[in-house]
Image 1 (spheres, rainbow, N blue to C red):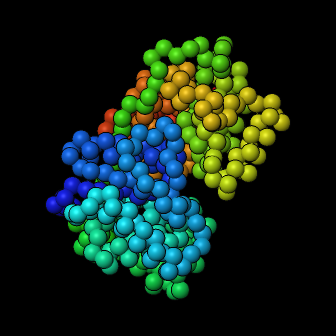
Image 2 (cartoon, rainbow, N blue to C red; image 1 turned 120 degrees about the vertical axis):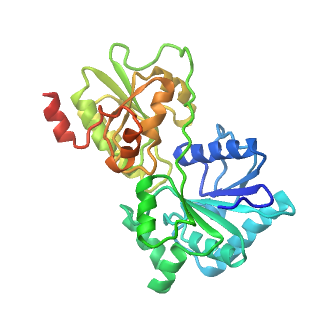
Image 3 (cartoon, rainbow, N blue to C red; image 1 turned 90 degrees about the horizontal axis):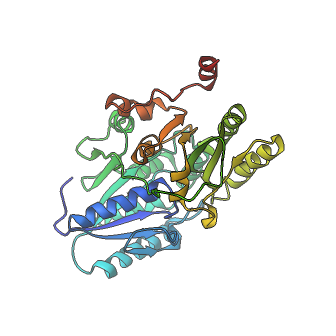
Length: 349
């Protein structure tokens, strides 16, 4: 993708909550700024206090939404353009959007198409597909359009000035097989930077005489909290488990709260959401952990499999072959992970 004459970029996402995509945006902004780019991040929500981004503008219409129409989409496009032009002044701008095809905000495909019609240079970075395991999102997005052809053309628009970035080799092959030109398709793996970890944390308030196993995640559905509960039951004499954050999206809260209630009912010790509301610092939670764990059944890039090593922690739990095969090919030691829990239990017996 050719570099614009003006080194100005707008990065757009629905929110800047603590989590993987926000870390990706923060890292990208730092790298771009160090290379002389001027970076503006536009979000649908105010950033978390811990966010390190220098320049953030909030447009609430970018947040999650399941309804809308073309008039609202065109208005949102105008607001985005006005916000960017006010910040940068003159000069060409690269528009970098995250997860526009995920169906989190039904206006996004229309906004992208409108920007493209106005000749704006676009980079659409896909972390996840709504077509893969997110049927409700896909159906909601499709219902926004009048007929199938419009939906397909709007969800993945094709033009010389529209480029796509994917974060794993599998997704690159998916879009290539679907007919997308490799001149407009880029494999852009996420940068892996050291997690923040205190060198000498205070004595930990968990697992005084057992291993402390941390799941550094927000407990949304695909993170598979039920399997974490099962592992905590199996290993409760040897280890104590914790998750870092609770879900914010109301859609996932009832499911999460159900697992919390079940753990309490069964008497299984799991420390849920230990970093919620500043209860404990994430840096301390990382330092307290003896091991990290992931029971997720769906990841885009797989930072969870790489980041623990940056703070000297091993990772246990569920291996996702499509995500980790590239890591393993490059020498990452992930043999301690399992693909099927039943097979792992049989191996340990």
